[in-house]
Length: 396
Image (cartoon, rainbow, N blue to C red; front, side, top):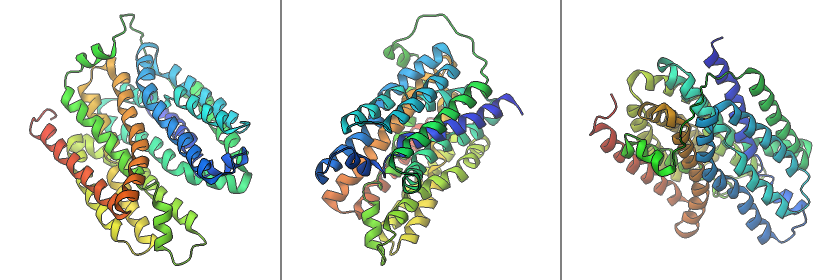
């Protein structure tokens, strides 16, 4: 097996597990906070929101920092640091004594993450041009799938193994990711002993700034759209269901349907971007996804919503790998880690803002408008991509 294929296989598993590690706590958070001694339902809801969202906000801040370190010291050391650190921190969550320790550990988890940034940079720089789109499409499925399937995995582990074992089992899987990375990931990296550029100097060194910003926004919108439904999906499913006994399971399935579709579609759309151009895949994905959001507001049963969420995942799967491919093409190799770090930060902010925005829109304007407004954001983004990429003809 070629080195880049072996790296891709190991990195996919590691990225999937870090995605699960960050999101698996979502369905068990209220139960675990109650287990830690908080009885008031209002406080449980507040602490749950803080503990879940804090990790992504902190990760958004630190991803570019770890990306910069990856450019300077190599990507494999960053993979080892992040996977081992997360394994330890997630296991420690299982022995937290109070809710403040839990929140502190979630913040620490956000600080030490960076596995996704290093993985994406490693795959982008170690894979030949001919297979780059397919490889980036494949690796992009890992984090998205881990984040979207994590809540379902966490719920399953809690139901079958108990609250605290959710953390111990997830931590063990992260430790396995560390060991496989240590043993099997190979990197051809030559450290360049030159002055480290500041953020301003890094930005000034990027040749296509407007196009880079466009890709950041596209990455942000794609994750925001997937997570805008998270705060309302359980309530929305309960309104659509005649039988309320399986609402939680149906809600988890509907939320995770996009993740399953992402796994199926992203490598294929990545390969397609190698053939026809990443810019065409991005534009098509944005338009199709924007259209698919609209009928989600008019479904009459949970199965219709699941089908539409699955179709949405098939479409949005083309956004991340194509954005990576564009950035890889227009970014100097010495800056790849830092720019990918900023890109992944945009994704983390999209997860956080999607969850917040979806809840606020539903509260002020009604649940159906979550789908309409998210649709509008995708279609506006499509117009921007068209004007920046097609009109300027920057990318062949």
